[in-house]
Structures are given as structure tokens and as C-alpha cells.
Image (cartoon, rainbow, N blue to C red):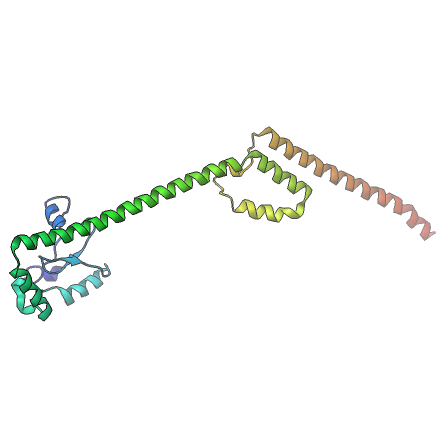
Length: 222
């Protein structure tokens, strides 16, 4: 933001947390990128607003400038002044120990979260592997043959089978019939032969019926 260039009350800057600015980032608890912080240099806090240019520009106009701090005590309210006076009265080593204790607890909370997420990921991967192994044992060529027989014997079951097959993983090679499986091929050929036989029988029956009805029709006309 060019309008803040040379400002004596506000600074907008980039920090390379993997280069020269690494120690500064560690001091302010930056552990992910990109991270935006704002506030007094000695007590920066996380920016949690929108990241569009206009949103950040409005936030800067409303919030950047002198902040309450030990060097700007006149900008502090009564509660803030009381805390500053309390910390100024403390022994330096005791104050450092208290800060280190709080930062250690913050780090521990972050580490606990990361470990919990890692365990969840491991559990998910184990369950996924167990599922795939079980499906592999169930989706065999025999299942495909059984479905073929059902299609042949009970056409009304086709709708149910199609619904069942649609829910199967289309990328799972076990979910489809193996074109090289001789048993599956024979079942398919038997099915085709049976259907062809049924069509032939139906055709012959129709022709015989027509031949039988023709003389009767002629007799009636006479």
C-alpha cells in the first residue's frame, strides 16, 4: 500500500520467514505461510479478516497507527495501564519465565493437535486398506456369474442388479467381469444361445399358427 510509504505511525512490510526474517517469525509464532499479523511491534496478533485488497485497505485505515504499549501509555485504557504497571513492577527473570511458560503451552497445544490429526490419518488409512481387502475377497468372478444367471432366469431382478452395480466402484477391476475368464465367457455364450433358441422357437410357433389359421379362413369365405 503506497499510501503508507514513509509513514511515521504505521508500517506495512513483507518478512521472509525462511531467510533473514526467520528469527523474527519465530519470535512472533509464525508457523505457516502466508501469515498476516498486525498491531504493536512488541505484541503482534493474527489478522483474521478478509484478504481481498479493499478489505485489507479498510482494515489498515481503521486499525493501523499508534497502539497501546509501554511507550504509548497515553493510548491505553485503565485496564491496559494496570497490566503494564503490574508487568513493569515484576522482576525481569520472572516475567521472562512467565512468557516462556505461556509460549510453551501454546506450542504444546499445537503439537497435540498435529499428533491427533496424524493418528486420525493413520486410522483412516488402516480402515481404507481393510475395506479394500474385504471387497477384493468378495468381488470374485463367481459374483459376476451369479449375476448373469439371475439376469437369465429372473429379468425382473435386472433393475435391482443395475442399482447394485451402479453403486460399485467403476475403477475397481474386480467389479466387472473378466473378459479373459473362460467361465464368464461360457456363461455369456450359453446365455446368447438360450436367447437365440427362444427367439427361433417363438418364430416357428408363430409360423405354424399362421399356417393353421389360413385354411380355416378360406373355408369360412366359401
